[in-house]
Length: 54
Image (cartoon, rainbow, N blue to C red):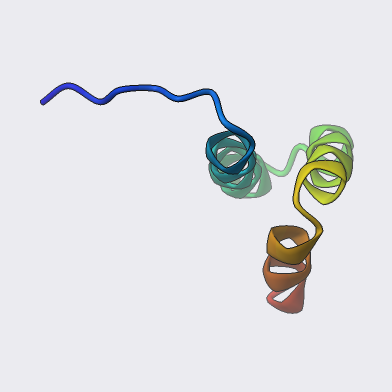
């Protein structure tokens, strides 16, 4: 299966979110903080939804 990468802001935000979940499992706090800031800057709504569960 091949996926076409759009490199759009929503795609980037989703990738950040997926990476954040992986970083949380690894306990990499410094990286989590940086990724959260990037997600917040890119998509405030998605960041807010993510933070509701934290």
